[in-house]
Image (cartoon, rainbow, N blue to C red; front, side, top):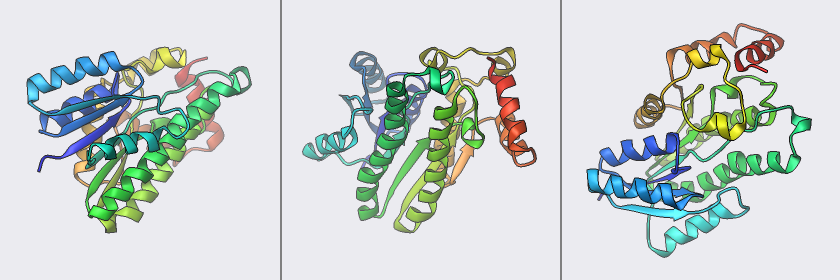
Length: 257
C-alpha cells in the first residue's frame, strides 16, 4: 500500500519542499495550513507531476484543540498517516517586553502545544500499528539562548529536547522520530518575524531544498536529530566549548539589532 504523509505548514517555505520531495517518492499527501489557495495550487502541481493523491485541509493549528480536530477529520474519511512532518511554526523578533504577550502565547501554542498534540494523536496510531515516522522541525536557535528571539528560541529548544526523547521512547514501538534543526533559510520567516538580516547571517543562509532533504534523509536513516548545513553544525558544536554568556553575545552579533 502507498504511504501517506501529513505535512503541516504546507502553504510556504520548507513545507513546500517537504511536500514535493515526498510526492517525488510516490507518497500520498495531506497538506495542512491556514491558507487554502497556495495549498490548492501546490496540490494540483504535485498531482500532475507525480500522480499522487493530495488532500488539502485549511486549518489554523494555533487554535486550541486544532490538532485533535484535524485527526478527527482524517479519521472520518479513514485516512491513515504514516509520516507526520510537524513543520508548522513561526517566530517573533524583538524584545520580549515590547512584544504583546498575546502574540507570544499564540506562537507558543503553535510551536509547542500543537506540535506536541499532533505528535501524540498520530503517534498513538503509529505505535499501535508498529510503524510510522515523525519529523519535527526545530531550529539552530534551539542550541542556545537568543536575545531578540527569547521566546521563539525557547520553543525550539523544547522541540529539540522533546523530539530526541521521543526518539528513544518510540523506536522500540516501531516509530522513528527525527528532529531537524535548520539554520537561517530562505523562507518567509524573516518577513513574518519582522526580523533584520545581518550581512553575516546572509552569508550563512541556505536554500530550503537542501534543508528539507537533510531532514527527510535523516528520518529515513532513523537518526534522532540532524543539523542542516556544515556551517550550522560548526555553530552548534562550538556551543559545547563556549560559556553561555559568550553564546548570547555571539547571537546578538550574528542576528543583528
